[in-house]
Length: 91
Image (cartoon, rainbow, N blue to C red; front, side, top):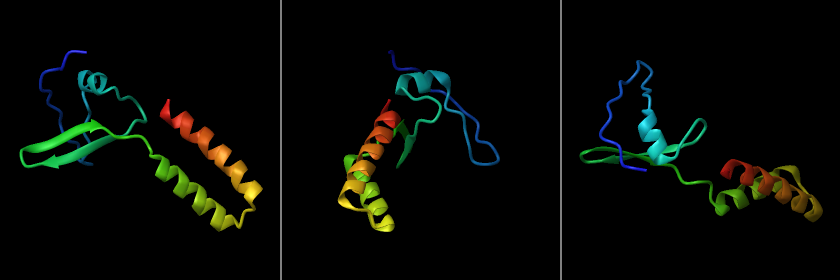
């Protein structure tokens, strides 16, 4: 896709702004996707946020296992559940 020209958006009273459609399409983001706002000296860079890392997945599983005092079998089942959820979010 061709890089769009600069776009202008208005900030709402709640501090929100609309990311124009041409910019959303260029970034490949849609409803429910996360974007990263990176402060720079000359402004703010807006880019598609990275997906959850494998590390985040492992930490989530570990927290669940400890909180629920799960057995090894329970943890394996929990891992399967988390992997399925993680894969759905990546689509």
